[in-house]
Image (cartoon, rainbow over all chains, first blue to last red; front, side):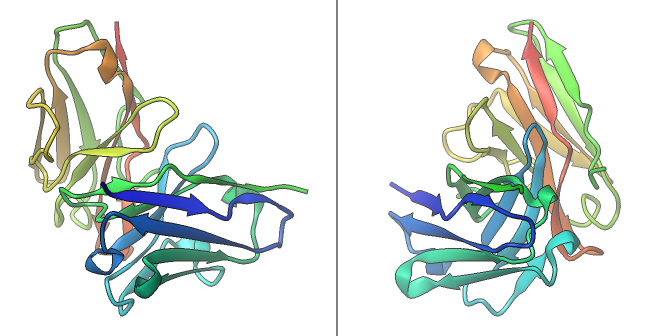
Length: 117
Length: 110
């Protein structure tokens, strides 16, 4: 059975950094586009970034460009999100998802990032 | 302000049908396939419609969807209490070169 498990969330001060990880099991990450989506407290879904199968195509939402970096290690079946210069408005549950627009779309349970002093 | 516009809330009685609209532009809905996601309280989103009108395996045929121009619509018939959730539309935006979601619609089964 496919499973995505996010980790790395926590409390960080404004201007700080965090690295989120998403480990896949039950399938090969190398076959899928992967996406990070976040959801602020009481808010809707916000698409953050995605990366294609061999990391040759990467896209970001404008609000995180220059601060966040998405990457993957297919050998480790893992997806990452390096988040620098964190702001209060980055506070959210961060979900990783495979094939977000496909019939095989699957989401992890999310990891909470809280940016606060 | 979301790129895609959905009604904040919709409601209907058990057994009835409800529709949720998702309005965009030629850069997103008008030029790309639309997906719909169900988010039950306290859980991760789950896709219920992909490619405008297709249901993934395991999604009941009570869920249907269509797209016309720059508007997509999700329909849920035979409403059940378990359908109470937030529903989001999503697609790619060619101008932004990014994914976009609607603001979400909270479905209440009366």
